[in-house]
Image (tube, rainbow, N blue to C red; front, side, top):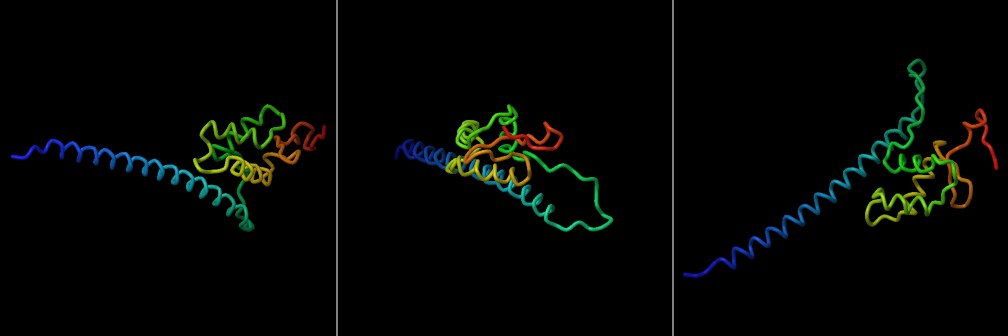
Length: 146
């Protein structure tokens, strides 16, 4: 009679390896799903803003959605101190908080988020790589210059 304990242990190890691979795949799918959901939300908002208004069907004007993504909320929270922030500083902080997906360039991700926020009036660019929250609310709607 043959001892099959070694074969069973090897099979258990193979199953454990397969489970780890499946868990990693599931984690990657979760990340992909989250990113696609955020992109879809942003695209739906962009699409709505580009559609012509139908006369008589306007609703009460809503403020532009700010910081709907975790990264957008993070940027506005960090910038609430009123100082100018460098893209590289923001990228490092966002990466450390886990807001930048693995394999993505933190500077690139932050740059495009900031550009989108600038287009919506949520931040302003004050230098080659410097950003801050708009100061228009301080002087009754006019931007102040230092």
